[in-house]
Length: 400
Image 1 (cartoon, helix red, strand yellow):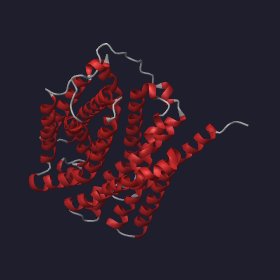
Image 2: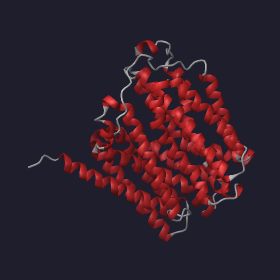
Image 3: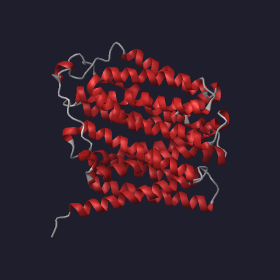
Image 4: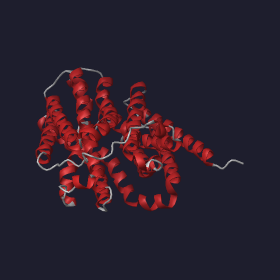
């Protein structure tokens, strides 16, 4: 039985967090710590901005796609093997990234780094479900994970800028490799298997989930929110460093204010979400995305690139991201409690595919040195989500 498998997992909540949190944080840190050197990588690797954009887009897409592979795999061979294998791959590719100067090799290693991050991330959350699904500690662990992740976009670029300034860009990937190796060394003797050897193996059924209108409506909302931040951090280095003349550290501090706006909104969002409900919160989140996009467009038309024309409007979008992301998981997954693992994997996978594909197209097809990719993505996806909401309301109206 599953319970017998979790008897060896007797850690206190702080000890469990110290064991699990590094694998969750490193997957996100590998995106944010790298941002300050993105503009410089074009010259360092002697390639084009589009190729460097792939090092962001492929990482995001593979991080999500891998979940529908490693989720079922962890159900078959166990959480421990998937976690340690993924973390070792992440550590090895991080160190190899520090040693390469070839653009195509760099892109390939970033892809493999994302594969490792995806495996470790899935196994971590599967372990949380195994051990804490019916225990009150689960809410504490999930909320603390979310709080820690909120600080990664704020602190990651600052750490990356300081490492690059004092030790060079390769130090960023050496740091990721060393941190991942330390996490594996800590987990190897302590991360016990939590998958029941004789437990049921439910069939993987994607079709009922993918045919559900509510799943798509709220997953589109999640994609709108997360994608807006993705396009922001894809273009922010080029706009602020390349056009506005910010230093790498100055860029990192400016970028951090958007993450801090999200953290500040999170502090009071619960009260409003409770009043507005799932649908009302998602609608208001999308309207804030549209408002922020309008402010960005005005700044692009009437002023030179600056903190106030590019970063300050992102504070409005950041608030919209929080209001939307606070409800999209519940809205998308509420009908699939019996197959929650599969539904969660699809939720993140679809979101990553939309963000990686549509977000990248916006950055590549429009001028990535301007605010237009973010204006276009936020406007398009918010409009699509609001249309999906209207369609969902029509479906739910009683026929007369």
